[in-house]
Image (cartoon, rainbow, N blue to C red; front, side):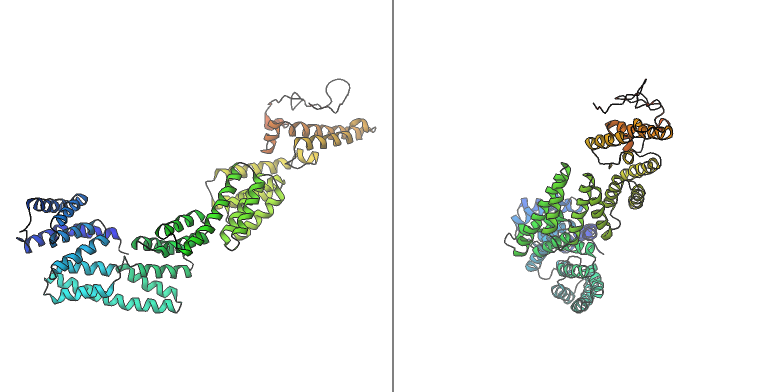
Length: 500
């Protein structure tokens, strides 16, 4: 596909030839100008030849202001505009040249080429025909004939593209339009039609590319901005949708479609922003309510429903509502199995429910789609440690509490079990021995789970009561060492249900 930059580069490389040609053919036409205009013309020529386009342009502006009928000044200024990629500005200057000097074939040929690139085929063909009738130089004749042939071919392709589009054969229409746009690179209508083909074919990325080009090629293209906004909206990108619909309203504040769409996108965007702020503030229940409102605001766009469920899944996992989180996360993953964030959140919820094998599976799946995610790596290692730990001793299970249990719940469970398994309740030596072992486990569980530092270690897969993993580390706050842990103290047994 021919780009605007390529065209500009070709024009710029052609400048020296154009200047020499003009000077040879039109030497002596400078009469009637004062010294200031003459100086501006000479400086403009030199700067143009040197590629200093902005400076050259200012001098040619001065020439046109000082001598409005100087067709060479218009032509040279048009040459600068083309080299700068400003074809829209070049076209009026070329038309002014032709108005002042109808037999200036170079200007007419240049205008025909620009009109062809803009898809104005009838006007372009008219210029090419007039060039051929004017007894042009061999090079110009050859170019005009080639461009006229190309214009005729494009006319045929346009008719075929319209026919295919009308018959809803979007793939064929897009193929014709591809060929058309290779020549008519600034043709807004062809790009808009191809965008419609891409939308119908489900290739929204390509449609966005054509519509963005169309919005730049046509100054007041409100429809392109509206379509871009609706595409982004249906993709679930509310921020880009809002940006594009605002561009539409800048051009036409009273545009009914854009204004109605703007109100919808603005409301939804505000709800999503508010929900994210609640998540940042760790107000997870409020965030859940806000995202439920998002689904009510836009129930028909799947992308927003999926986003809302994904963030509800995250909020529930963060607020340690494991069962609800698993249900919602699973719903998200049913529609989007490769959703890494939902996989990570469900894995965390599985850990909260002590379902370590399921958590490991989710983390492993997530790592396939996001290999360099450190959070996944750390979560997987933690889930593996917890699984290994659960196969040995699980203090939560010993006390019969959830991993999310608060200190008050832990102490209550401990007291109940300690009373049940108090060794004094058993007379048989074997039963007493069994009760003492059970009682020690219960006391250890209480010690670990009511100590924030020890509990954090345990929650990360380390057993602070296991001398093999702690290598003799000591914790204070009730018992002196893990290896010498004794809930009965020294001397005669005298157990009390007291807590600091």
